[in-house]
Length: 194
Picture (cartoon, one colour):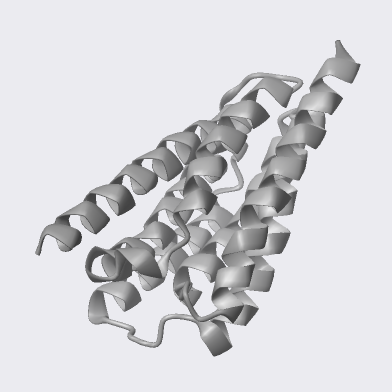
C-alpha cells in the first residue's frame, strides 16, 4: 500500500512541475503577471501547512504541499520584477488580514486550529489575484489552475492518514483552483463578447 501512495505522490509532484513550467514561461514572456501578495502568502503559508501535515501523519502525501511552497516562493521573487504592479487598498487589506491570521497561528499552538487559520490565510491570499484577474483574466495562465485542481485531488489519495491536518489543505485547494479556473474561463468569455 505504501508504494501505491508514493507513486501517486510522485505523480502529483511531477504534475505540479508540469503545470508551473508554462506559468513561469509566461511570466518571462510578460503574458502572466503574478500578484506578489498572493505568492508571498501561498509560499510561506504552504511551508507551515506542510509542517502541520507532517505532524498529522500525511507522509508522502505532504510532498506536493512542500513543492508548491517552494515554487510559490520562487514565483514571489519573480513577481517583484515581472508581476502585477497595481496594488489596491483591497489587496493591502487582504494581505494584512492574512498576516494577522499568520500571527494568530503563532499564538494558538493548537494544530487543528492552526491548520484552519493557515488555510484561511492561503484563501485570503487568493483575493489579490482574483481582483486582478477580474479585469485582466488573460494575465493568469489557466492551465496552472486546471492542473492544480487535479493535482491537489490526486494528492489526497497519497495521504497516509486522513484527518483535518492532512485533508483540509488539498480539499480546499482542489475546490479553490477548480473554481478559479471556471472564473477565468467565464471572465474571458464575457470580455470577448464586449
